[in-house]
Length: 153
Ligand SMILES: [Cu+2]
Image (cartoon, rainbow, N blue to C red; front, top):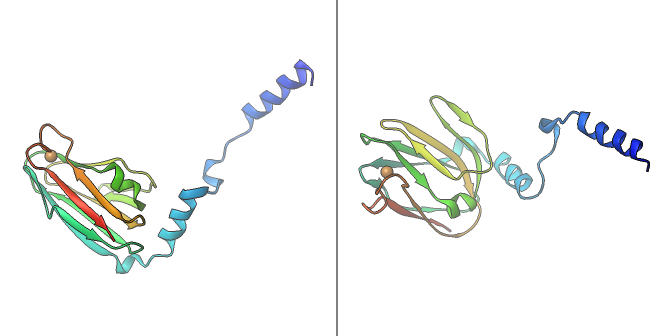
């Protein structure tokens, strides 16, 4: 290939429009989407966790694999709190996160931040059995006792 035709090939690649929305998800993500799509979300179990200074209530949850759940984080506290659970979020297939302000459809979550007197919902299906911890990453809230455990059976 001459330098000119190589340059032409590179330019052709650069100007080719990317239609990301047309591309099918691959691998794990495709499996998670297929699982999410076959669930009856009208039959989802709503699990409400109340956040306050400095506690989750309940702090221990038991969930079953391959069933749809709506985890509602309800912050009744006077300040913001969050829920960080890297290993937990890796063990579930996430349909979306939403509140009154809108909705985010995403297969990947790292943490959920909820302002005072606000709520956030995560729609998901547990897929990987195990025991997972979660906690609040703000200030010294975790040291104050703001942590909990989720068991997926
Ligand atoms: Cu907190």
